[in-house]
Length: 430
Image (tube, rainbow, N blue to C red; front, side, top):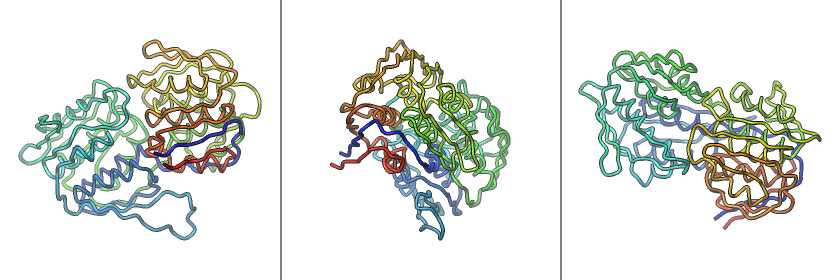
């Protein structure tokens, strides 16, 4: 099993290309099930989760082919992938495929909308709370679907004549639920109104892709989305938006280690709340024509309190990274996690490096330490594992991060990007 060796103490300087967003790419790939025509996605990140979803889609009959690099295209550019779901050969998504990644459960929506039925294993993925799928299934029921849970599978059937437009009112904001409702509603008969919809950029990206395929959607990016169902959808060519979580992760790494890095292709409006918080810590954050530039040359790290919130608030997927930064702050900070339960599993591993963190329910109280020291640590999930990398970059001596397959799920070429900026990082195989 691979691990990553990090020797801390080197500031980061240079530029880092921001990859396409995994959290946008996955629902866009799943949306290819809605049409028999070809969906071409550009800037698809090279990640294990993307490859796993390709296998899942292939199980349903989707042919996925990766285009070669175009002339003049940068070596670190994302892939262009063509998806063709001309014939759906199977409406069952089996446990052995779905159990590895929770987002794969979303195939239930396009399969149900296009084929009238779907049988999908209940999901796996990151172990950060229960992540119930109830809200997703309730959204489908609001469109007329009949849902049964049978032997670990969600079995969905559309009424005779197909799904019907209706009102989907989420009791709390859910990104997965909004993705599911959007995809199902595009082929439903009549009008669907989605209330308390997620406003995340990845939801907007999915809506824009669906509109390019011929869907009629208004209000994406607001809490109320209206979908007028259409009889069929066509093909589209669509670029995956840049990854705001990767942007924030590297921005916090620069603030942690010092230095000056340009995050190329980053779009600041996708994570303005996080960049504002980062500036409060003392980092210099500026927008340029090429992306976002982050600098911290000298000076301490100011403690800042944050609370995770749905977009446009501070994202839960940057909570662990920000906690790593606060372990070196000049004082005490408070980090409250309101989106997911049990998302503090990185605390114990950060403590192995010398971090001083106390937990009180959904609140983490971080007392900045003058020095972190390298040690062996164990990754527990995707975002927690990268927080250990950030802390290790500023720690004295050597840190060995184990179980880095978590990192491969969400960060493209992590060690290569850091090495280019002067970090001493090495992947060790086996």
